[in-house]
Length: 511
Image (cartoon, rainbow, N blue to C red; front, side):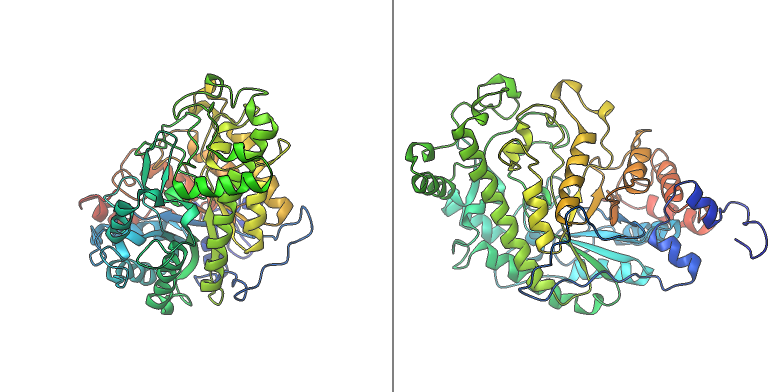
């Protein structure tokens, strides 16, 4: 506002903004107060150290919510070339003028190291990072070690695929023998199955090569690093059907414990507890991928899941997921420990069938705790121990968008996740689950979760994602209004913003 007078037309004073319950993004606050563009993220712990856990129910104040926009998933597909480079550049300029803090760049292992375990190709991704730097945007980098649906991105490096062709059991496997071609079994994390080295060692080489290639940007542009922990970057088992559209899937899913390495570990665990018969296979009476929990005995109310055997199996299954997350996050903490970045990782938002007593979709994905307690709590504890922010990709999910007969309960699930993080002192961040939204309730839903939430406000939110529909007349105006509402009306649309959008719209659209 003008000293001694009213705020200029089209803008609101900070006092009015606060009175309306808004929270300005970090970019808006910095511009208003004349501070530098970039807010440096909190440095990670020194290698080998774990963060001291805060007292129960205490979480650090994260201040302003930082707002990112995801770049097209296929920004780079061959390691050396940026797809639709002019369009991406124009898109960055438009969202910068709108007032967002930064952009998210997904970096795939399969693109960086496609043909050989000894050669990395960073040219294309580095060019995109340089664009963000030149626009004065912060950069959140998501390092993806597993494949992703869509976008013409290879699922795994070809040399990893060759290893999987020789030993099919290094891939996750369901009860019918179906293999998930985009995800290595967690049971082989530490086994030398990839050209004489373990997957964990290969992941570390990927991360360290990234640090070397982008070292000069950690002090100026890269503020956040998100580590991929499983399919679609999330810490979970690939419990959906192979090749399915996860945005449309509402079945229970299936257990992924039938590769020979997982079965060997299950058998060893059962024998150690004196029940060798429990270690022969997964539950024989569990439902199929697209079935409901009532379709078979295991997940029905008071079914086999609620028996000593059920607790044995689900605890072991969840424990294997937790151990994988602990291993990868521990390694990532060592790699990025000296860099001024906020480390984060994603968890799944398994809201369907959450109303069922057994919470089957969560359990099949690997989220379970004995005595019907919060299955996200052990995961939040591991995240907190490594100083890792938990990214929740469901800040837009509304009850009226889901089929009610699946027992969907997004509100209760989000409260459950927040309670787990608050208890263990883990920070949270958010993403939208739907890619590019035009539903009238979606943007208000996100705003209520990231701005007006009284407890566990996210440290950042990433809107996914820039692409074919992002600048369309159906999407761009409501998105622009959403950003304005978050930054309390700091910017008006001007000729420069319109020109940037027009430039993007004239080019071939990435996805």
